[in-house]
Amino acid sequence: MKKLLFPLLFLSLKLCAQDAAKIHQKAILIDTHNDVLSNELITKFDLGKRQTEGDFDLVRAKEGGLDAQIFSIWCGENYGKGTAFAFANREIDSLYALIKRYPDKITLVHNSAELKKAVDQKKLAALIGVEGGHMIEDRMDYIDSLAKRGMNYLTLTWNNSTSWATSARDEVTKKDSLKFLGLTDYGKQIVKHLNQLGVMVDVSHVGERTFYDVLATTTKPVIASHSCAWSIDPSRRNMKDYQLKALAKNGGVICLNFYSGFVDSTYSPKVAVFLHQHRAELDSLTKIYNDGDLANIRLNAMYKAESDKIRPPLSLLIHHIDYIVKLIGVDHVGIGSDFDGAESYPLGLDSVSDYPKITEELLKLNYTEKDIDKILGGNVMRVLKANTGK
Ligand SMILES: [Zn+2]
Image 1 (tube, rainbow, N blue to C red):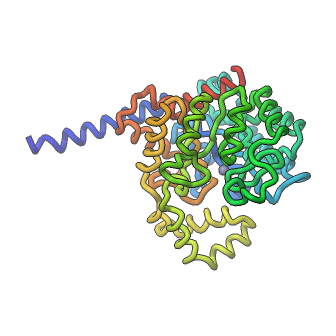
Image 2: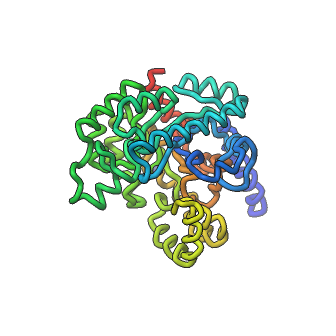
Image 3: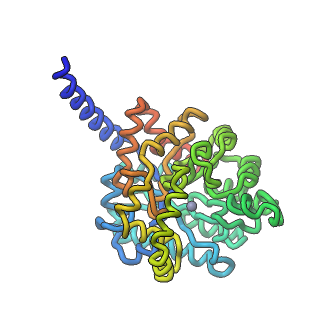
């Protein structure tokens, strides 16, 4: 009996992997947050070809079974009136350029019907998420213009508050000095305008007060494009249990961020030690890239063996998914990797080619094919359709 056990175990693991691959390929996988367009490395790379640096290219996206990507349009808080909107448009230009260069591999879509058509044509469906309300420069006509160019969601704030919405960072760190909390009347008008245009409201990065003001204002389900569960990792970018319950009531979806710092509460102190040990190099990289986050990404790539040691296990990310499913049901969870926007992800998740590992892990937890379909993209598709009307 004992002799038989090992081959049988091996056979069942193999079958499980085959099932996972089949289920993964069949499902429509939508990732709601990727920062490749904001990553300076993009200027050096041809994303139509396989790259060894960075997390995203069209070849690895295909291998990972990625069907639709919402590309993040982002600039930091040093951009503002007179510069931020123009910067956003330049990033949209680079997405358009990629699509023009590879029309047989990637296409811009505006709604769930077009997304499905792109999947049938075996092209990656490209969508646009504008990450940070500062890019509209307080102007409704700029919202209209971005929507015309394909904006599918607006993240109301990035880490910085706008003149009409307070961010998670500011609500936590500057609470006493803020002139207002949550959404102003103008902020509420913006939410209503986004609803009318069919642009999803993204509540990742916003403060709790803004979150509740949004839910009291919106007539459509919202999206949290790249956040995790606060109960597992109490980062201010993650969502508390009662926020998750409110999100479910709204019919919305939270898409899980893969960033190690939002997955694992023990990551931040560990990365602080790592950065301290490489302070001088980090400082010089920051000068080269003119951006601390990009410098951090490069530093982690340079010292891969060292940085690998502090990455959380993939099972912890899966635990976030499972926790949220158990709390609010399987209809409100999705995938929002933040690939190319962070320096570290759980072990095994190195690029867009690694999404199938998530399906494998969910199958191990006895998730059904139907549930996996919802998590990989079905739920986001529902919210997209509810917003765009088709
Ligand atoms: Zn972000």
